[in-house]
Length: 541
Image (tube, rainbow, N blue to C red; front, side, top):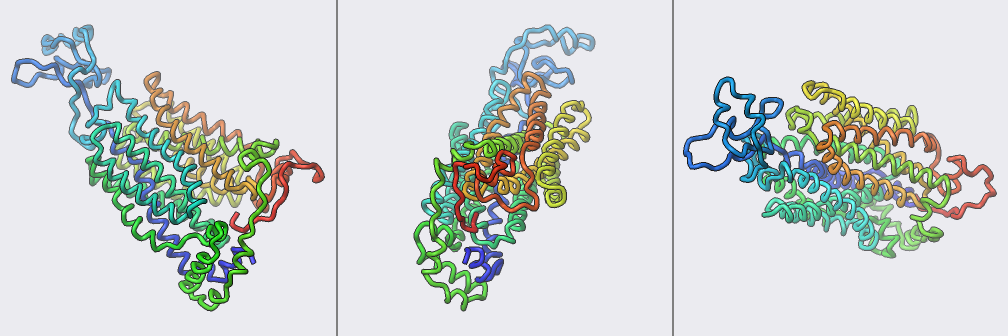
């Protein structure tokens, strides 16, 4: 009996599985709040240099102390060396343009409004220091990258539920600690540790869901988890609107993980992991508990250790290691490189758009709502295209459309705000569809014996894209349109790379590297030896 057949015998997608998925989906709603939090906690208000201190008690008009830009607004990063009183004369405005200026030596004055209390205003992350804002987001994404590998290893050793419980606690504590950070350095450290925990929550929530639910329900559960993230984007917009101070907003999105930590102790560990870790007695107790909850107590009582131990037979090790197998043969190299392109460019362009809501000139709260709302039809359409036209068309088409929208935005004048936002929303929706397709397509491209390693490769490249995306925003100092050109070019290049990947619609999952080599056209003679033997695998793959 396979493990999938065992789960079906104990109730399939029964009451236990529904409750379990719901308990894991609720924390996923808060993932978006942390991933996109700096759109609001690091918002940049209108600002200008603090005027030079003088002995006069009366207010000094900005016109005589701060030069204006091309839109007749006070410059943000320069002030006059000497007060230009003559500019108050009716016909003397133009003469001030040649006056000597200097950087903001006495700090800045920030305009009251939506972003009056952010990390930008608290630590003056403007002008020469504005790159530190992007660096803080990259540090957070670096934490997610490191956490993906670290907590993946720890969950294989200590269990999925145990590591998930720890990550809930770490995220709640470090998130709340970040809200109290007295310096930018400690803020970045808190965000890094939060990113570590976020990766553990995402990774182990997905593993627990997949390992407790029957095969036929995986697509539905994956969609539910995806829409949990979408719901989180709506929730973030509402919380940010009601809680404008960055410290209180940071605290608000972190405290719920304390509750998640408490109820996670009630969640049973993955029986699949317990069997693979040589703990059949715990697995038997857990499965009998599941059977009772699903109303299958009789079937649960019939389980015995011998049957479970038969499911726990270990597969022979992959020759040379799973990572080396990703690039050992031509077909595997093609698949691995194609998947890397897809995941990197999707994440890179996604965070390039999603973390620059202010750049579109529309209310940021409305922008966040629109960016969240577009995910709903985008993910639905992607599922329909995946089933009707195939994975290859859906993946390449969504990437190409995203790239075209982003590049088109670079050619739209900043005054046409509605058109710019329309292109941005369409591009972001296309990237959400690309993510949705990538989760399905990647699992079908890699053979069963190294499927988890292949998925790990895609996830790692996505994190790298998320780290690089905020740094590319700094190129706006060279040209305002340069970041959009880079963000738009990446998905178009990846769309072309998907042409090299094989179609997987209506095909069985590949079991061995030989299957992949055959599908990619590099192995036509079945007698040719591929350096990885076929192995029998568990249904969990």
